[in-house]
Length: 167
Image (cartoon, rainbow, N blue to C red; front, side, top):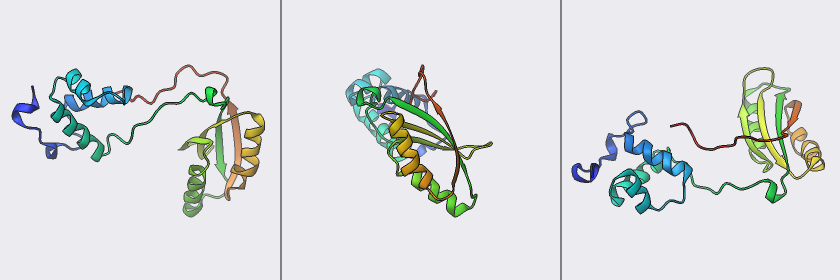
């Protein structure tokens, strides 16, 4: 059973030295976060204690950042998905950090990416309807000091959404 005999030494790991079993564990967990340790061990061909030790290492080292349930936005009445490009009026380091902090505090902003090009940020926003989006812009986003132009695109259909990384 692989590392059960020779003993698993997590100290030999670094970001560049994960072995095939570690990648196999990560691949399974990102698709099936609720899998039991016993089932995970069976699937990767290691003992449950070895797998648990590896998973704990992967969590501590930051390869696994959390476990969550993927929710259906439409069933929760969040029917409008917006991709908003935001440019800043000011490009000072302090204002940049404050803007990022402000975006993080808005629950409707589910993703915030600092991007290159004509705009500074790409936001993914979910809201109930157009009125809710208008209110969000007026009452929250446009009140953030430093926000300049916003260009909104409304998602008409989604054909792939995934949190699974190609490892």
